[in-house]
Length: 196
Image (tube, rainbow, N blue to C red):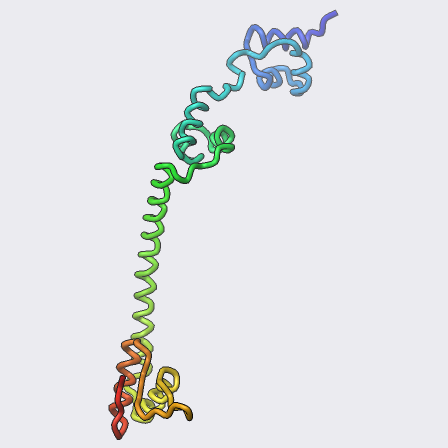
């Protein structure tokens, strides 16, 4: 005696060319039960998952050999990145290829654009900070200039030592703003000072 459910499942598979999901829905049974009833009956051709074409895989290998990245291969062949990686991930990317050099140039240009924008913002912020600081400081009084000049000399000047007494004034910092400030300090002090 044959199982009428098995006969119907086989008929749906062979005559109507239905998938397992469609047969499950039609008969109201589990997926495992459908597979058990259809044992030995091949699925319809339209339900078979297409395999990667050999020519696409060969093209992926060729692209990798000329230095293309997995992302570039995936886009070029219209496949998922995971598929492209599965095909060519075992082949190291040739860093000396023209494609790799082109990628490095493009990445360098992108970095230069990003840093140019950041540099512009940073320079504007620094200029504004200097302006605010100058506004806050204002004009230095004579006593303030004396103190600032003495500190600059202590930090950036050549000092007299017991073994090497000196009677000249030397300022070694080349920052233009500090030099200007030190010159103002020297000009306000009585006596002579030789700048070198």
